[in-house]
Image (cartoon, rainbow, N blue to C red; front, top):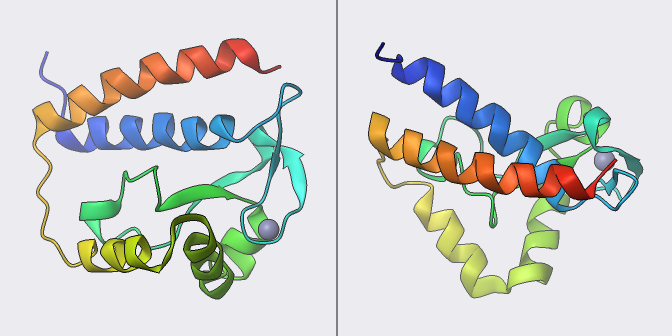
Length: 134
Ligand SMILES: [Zn+2]
């Protein structure tokens, strides 16, 4: 059966979101919010985008564009973009930050096979992280 692109997209986002939260979690599953520093179990956290979700080119960019965020920052404060930007510049430097800002304007049409490939890789990585965290 051929899976619909939208179904794969949603599954890939689910895996990506958990992967981002687990990557930064300690052994007991606690993870710090990127923009306010509060700590919660990764299952209670969100994976927040810096550049918003309508920019498909950086939608799955877990190196820079997605970080664990508490529900307050991600939802009530709309992602706290000011703090997010400041943290990214501190973490990567201004040049890389600008590069990310430029990449948001790229038009990217993800093919089904690209999405499946990324999904397979991230599922593997996710399983490794799951083993290390309660
Ligand atoms: Zn927060």
